[in-house]
Image 1 (cartoon, rainbow, N blue to C red):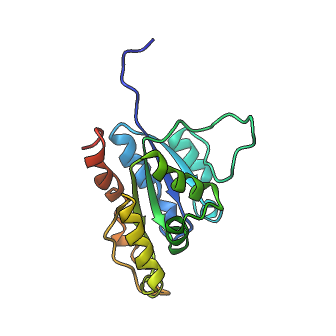
Image 2 (cartoon, rainbow, N blue to C red):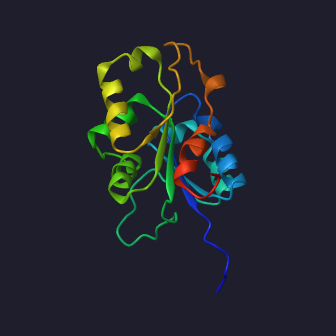
Length: 181
């Protein structure tokens, strides 16, 4: 039996957004701090990332669908969760308690399990102007979710990728955790 401490495990929930292909930046930053990392992608988010590269980097399969009863759990339990990038759709569904994908199910359940969770929204300013978006972010904050202060990018620009700070998820989580803090 090993006397070494258990390595903390981070779930990175990836949504379908233009910056998603760069998720390896967050994975590397977390691994550099001693985290094990597993990726959970929304069904559409799966198409935005290089599945083979991400699985090679983490050493775990990407999860995007529910397991069948009796299937082995492919990821260790999460000690923390980073939702990056988080889309308008995922933020609003999560805040409303909708659990129609594995990613949303994990996020909804994390609240009840007390798992520290950080979210890095990636939305355009037209979508962010909708009242539901602000209300959803406010609800997530009241649930204890750590929300980035990322400024929405202009619509139809594909912009903001240069301002998307993947490491901010770890910075937000650090005060709640012993690793990286």
